[in-house]
Length: 617
Image (tube, rainbow, N blue to C red; front, top):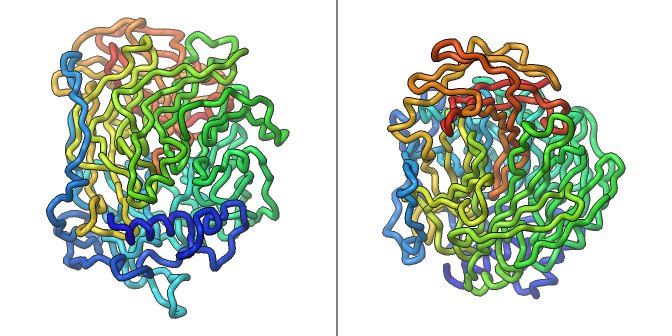
């Protein structure tokens, strides 16, 4: 990227005006004004003009109800930067290493945000700031562009799609306001409740229900402060709390439909953790079994009592650099194992891997890309004397994704080996996913798997599907949909990664849940939950079997909000030939598993079943 393009990207990312000093233009502690917003990705210098695109219908790429998909423009030869990728040799000596397939050549939009819904679809969306996408809305269903120079100008490009991950089919969805760098979570009924964004969208709450004809519903002016780069967390009572965002040093609860917040709750911690490059956006938030919240921003973490509105414990600093946007580490709450916690709460352990030096963004302004952080750190916030336990990954990674697989292992994928988040602020895409096994001893937890051939850095996403495979999409380091003349073209191909347990020699031995045996009225707190499964070949005993339940997250900017797995205690196990009846104890309270839909899996001798959607009430 040339110096002018670099200056442009920095200026946009920091909401800057050209010609002023860095800290003055950033002015991160000042309130926002309407003139402070970046108007449109195409309203820049000539070199940022909209890419030339070919508007020919994509044949056979979507069902008849999803007209409007346009062809992906051709890309030129790879630049030197694009060819400079990083791969780690797969650990094939330990067994299968997984497999990559492309499930779609064109997702219609570049999936900056993604969530898997319970009706067999993944919802993907980008931002109207990047201009035209590759999917048109029907002519009679365009949206009014609030940022157009001429009043009444219509935007007929979809910025959200519903993706059928089994067929590759697409359905355009209509978002009225800008969702750039927004947040989200599922409610108790499986609706995606999505919050904040940019410009006219920063105070909006949006809701999408899981059905084949549903579309976005929007509630404008819901928040007192704009929520851009914020984190949304579901609470035990079903409400949502939203933390932070650019120049938003506090939190708010998502108001009920028809209501609006008149003020936010100031939180000094979020201001204290903001440095000259922020490095505390998209803070990591986890609901602890105690009912309090773990909150991590930059390099500091606290336990927060949201009912009392106060911090009840400050945890040790995590040294080495910054971990939140734009330093963008990966983080998750490790699976909560209820098998040995029948009388009390399980130990909650938070893991944070990678990130960037505190100076990474400032260095990126000068086209200097520093190595990403390599450490992986774990902490039990509920321990009497909590301490970070650290070990090194095979390679440093920033902007990666971290997903919990049905087996309880973690998959680390996407991202870069140098730089940080931002348009054009990273180099050396990492093509190799890493399997992390938290129950193994330190020194043997990381295992490199098969590499992809597609670079996915900034604005890439991923999600675990009910069959145990992983949907991988997105990647756009540009201020628009640019397919040529840039180091890293906008990525619209969608991949599926099959972890080692889906290898051809193992997949036929997977357990199979009898869908008819799964109680239609769901799972109830503290009550037995009984269903059947079968084994197609090798028999199993109770010690061979684990039952997990997984809350689907909302993923954006490398962070999967509200991702949560529980390992359930098996109380009875009966064998009937190759069929088995198993009873587990449901979590005893919503602090362990908030109300909603979960993917329940049987894992037998390390092989997970296809999951069943189960609602806990």
